Image 1 (tube, rainbow, N blue to C red):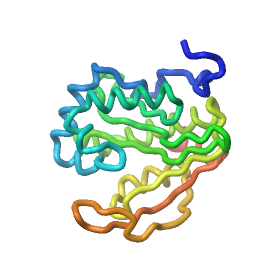
Image 2: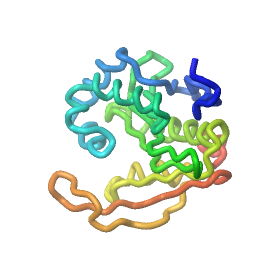
Image 3: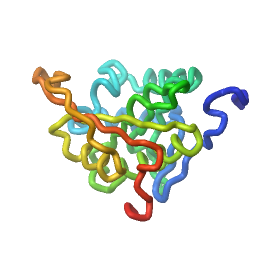
Image 4: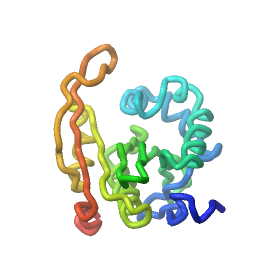
Length: 197
C-alpha cells in the first residue's frame, strides 16, 4: 500500500469500464504487447513519443518504465484489458502530471489494430479522464494528435476536448514533417458517459 501522502492515494485501481479493465501493466501483458508491435499498423500508430523503438522491441522495458513512473507519480500509464478474455488490447495514460498546478501534459491512448473501430480508445480515455478529475483533483488535461490521424482526433472531440491550436511541422514521422493538433479539457467539460454509450 502506498503512503497517504502519495498523490495516487485516492486513485482506485483497477478502473472498471463496461468492457475493459484499466490496470497497471504486468509481465502478463508482454505476449499481447509483443503481438501488437509485430503488427505494422499498430506499430506505426503507436511509435514515438509514446514508446521508443527499443521499448517496442522489448515490452518488458516498457512495463518496467511504466511502473517506475507510477512510483515516482510522474505519469500514469495503464494497460487496457478486455473483460471478456483478459487480453491486453492497448494502453491509456496520463503523462506529465503536475501536482502543483493540477494539470496533465498529455492524455495518450492506443489500441491494437485488430480492435480498431470498437470504441475502446474512447471508453478507456473517458474513464481515465473522469478518475483524473474526480480522484486525482486535476483541473486540466491536455492532449494532441497528428493532424492526419483522424481517428485519434475524433476520440478527443467525442470526449469534449476543445481544439486549442496547431503546431506546424512539429514532428517528423517516417522522415516527413507533420503538424500536431493541440487539445485541452477542463474539469466540468468531460461529456456525460451516457451520451457516448
